[in-house]
Length: 199
Image (cartoon, rainbow, N blue to C red; front, side, top):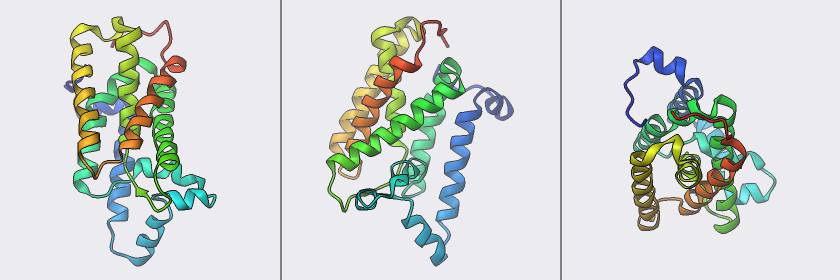
């Protein structure tokens, strides 16, 4: 379930939304890494910035999901998406998976806006990724037949570790993680259907 054995072409065919997300955030990271002054200015208009949201720049609740602070940040989040997102895209379908992923990220950013000071700046897909864990948590609690006992134990262990790290690491947007997790869990009531089949 969480071990990828597909070749490149098969991965793209089976998981087109995951592939698009991974490619888009990589392209955006490369673009915003350019030293051009205009690029830096444009990046400043799409990062998560609570004061900007307060001034009506609503897109800042969406665009930070695809942006990253550095290569390590991008790599870590991309690996998390690569490992944990494909199974959900297959189980939920492209539209519902995208709804959960984007919706959780937006909920995480709304939570950041509500709880953090106005000068708070943030980027990253972590809220959306935690939303995926929220879906898995929903399955563990209510639809265990979709993932099995072995994967359920793994998910609980990984989630506990991830939440713990959110509290320990001061550089992490803890509110995006927690709100994204809750968002994914709540969206599961809408997106995980009774007819869903095991991955």
